[in-house]
Each structure stands twice: as C-alpha cells, then as structure tokens.
Amino acid sequence: MTGKEQENYAHCLAVLRDTDRDRYLACLLAPAEKRGALAALYAFNAEIARVRDLVREALPGEIRLQWWRDLLEGSADGDAMANPLAAGLLACVEEHRLPVAVLTDMIEARIFDVYNDPMESRSALEGYAGETASALIQLASLILDPQNAPQSAVAAGHAGVAQTVAGTLLMLPIHRRRGQVYLPADLMAATGLTPEALLGGSDKAAAARAVEAFAGLGREHLAKARAANGISVANRPAFLPVALVPHVLRAAEKAGAGALERSLQPSQWRRQWWMWRALRGGPF
Image 1: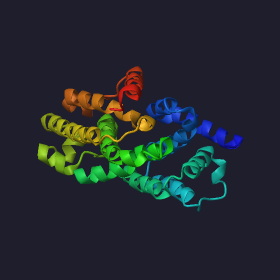
Image 2: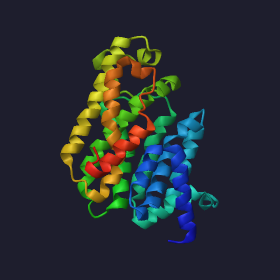
Image 3: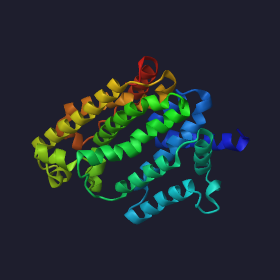
C-alpha cells in the first residue's frame, strides 16, 4: 500500500468517527490491517445514507448519489480522485475485489431516502434493507474473511433487515418531522394506524400497536440471522453493529407510542460495551 493510500484510508476513518460512531468503533475492533478498507466502505455508506440531511430538495440529493455511481462506474469528472474518501473507496474496491454492482445497488436504494414516498409493504422494506444494511455487512465480510464470507450471507441478509428495523425505530421522530413514513403500509394497516396519524401523532393506541408489530418484525429477522449462523470468527467485526439491535427493539417495545416523540438511542458507553462483548462472545 502506498503512502497516499494510507493517507486516504486514515481520512476515511476520521470522517467515519464523525458520521457513524458505531461503525467507527467496529473498525477499531477489527484487525489493524483491515481497518482502513473497512473505514472507506463504511464512510461511503455514511455519506450516501445522510444525503437527506444535506439537501432540502430531492433533485440535489439524486445528483449527489449519481456522483458516487459515476465514480464507481468510472465516469466521474477528472477531479474525483482529489476527494480522499472517493479515492479510499476505489482503493478498497480494488484491493478486496468488491462487486461494484452491489455498491451501485446500494446507491440506487438510497434514492428512496430523498423523497417522501411511503414504504409500500413489508417486502419492500426487506428489499430496501437487503440492498443497504445487509449488503454492507456482506461487503465488510468480503474484506475481513473473503474465504468464509459466503457462509455468512444468509445471516447477513436477515441481520441487515433487523438492523434496518432498529434504525427506523431510532429515526422515527426525525422521519416524522420530515414527513417520511418508513413503517410498511401493510403493517400499519394491520394495526389500524394511518400514515396521517403516524405523522400527526393523533392515534397513540394504534401507534403503540404499530411500533410493537414493527419491533416484532425486527425480532423475527434477528432470530433467523442467529439460526443461520455461518459467521466465522474473522467475520465477527462485520456484524458488531447488529449487537445493538435487541436493545433498541426492547426500548421501542417499552416506549410504545413514545418512540414517535423521543430518541431511543442508548448511551455511547453502552453501545461500546455491547459491541466489545459481541466481539468475544458472538455478534448478536
């Protein structure tokens, strides 16, 4: 690895510390020789995941996402490599032979974030999670232990859905302020909650039922991830953020409709402890 590549990887790790503290810690708990590539992958994910935070309208968001797609497909403008995060991502892709199509599918899935379209169904949510959180876990596994990564693909698929459910529960107050509805329409209909009531907070009883049902969906996928197994010791760091999921689901079930109003984010020291413990005893 050249000095410039090391510098780019170090930049990615510094960016990650500010944009995704949990995956930053997961990087620090990974082997030192894998840390830079993981940081580049995770920093890229954080960048495309926060596009909605950076723009007020959908079109600029789509333009930002298109830039990353162009970069991966080799058609970005000539100044692209001046961006150390972009350079770090490309170095990571080349070094670990990551499938570009999976990364561009991640970008495509994130277009949903820049609009206020409702999540149509449970299967739509599972598809969204598969192309974002699940794909990220599997890509990290390809960096950490490519030989054994295929054995953890099923676990990664279900773990990513569980992680997306937990993340959505954490983001409920923010999504409501933006007018976004990530809870699947079929799940809300089954619990008697309308999108208008979710956004307006006008039906606490139905909201509590919807939160409980949504957390149940997360538990269902978490149980399937555990049953799938196949996670090598070397690939455990890829799954470390999933260790937070059961704690978030439990907090949401306890909060009920309160999850619409206040953050359920556990304290930083608790999250660090759960991840450190998962590294030694199993990821979730």
